[in-house]
Length: 228
Image (tube, rainbow, N blue to C red; front, side, top):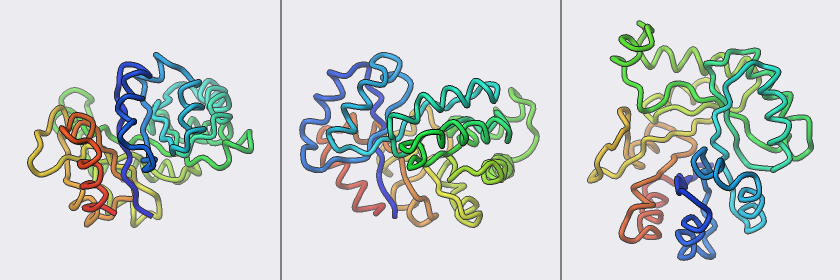
């Protein structure tokens, strides 16, 4: 089932809650990322869950397997709906994340996904800065294959790679979503909600096109209409 996730990249809880006021009764899916999580901590996530919101906790864990397993064990009790790691940590690290998440009953209900290649990364950056000569799509496919081998539920990728992920039987969470009349910002591989649907994405993550809109609720409804 497809869904729209709002990227709540706010500097603090007060700004987030002010933004959410007009959404009363809609309870959209929310992405809580590093910026606000490092400011407000797990308490914010618990509050949002108690209010009925679904949560994608976007912390992109990336460390040695033992550290990631312990960190994920701590996060598992929050009962979020989706949480992620960086696939570049390797298969053993992703397996460790799965063990940590599955160590609690709440964690067993959480989908675990892996970031493949950030949507801000282009082929030029891969080659010139990261010394990876393969095309982005091939790297995404390999990283997704590793995630599947590690027992994860899906990956974060651009909508452009969603068809590859769908063929592999994994869910795809796709940032870099813009309306046709929006600026790209710092994203390189972008798509509209309608095109993401056509490509077979499971979830789209939409930030500024909703959070900075004159009417965020109308922008959210537009996303849902075009994608779901």
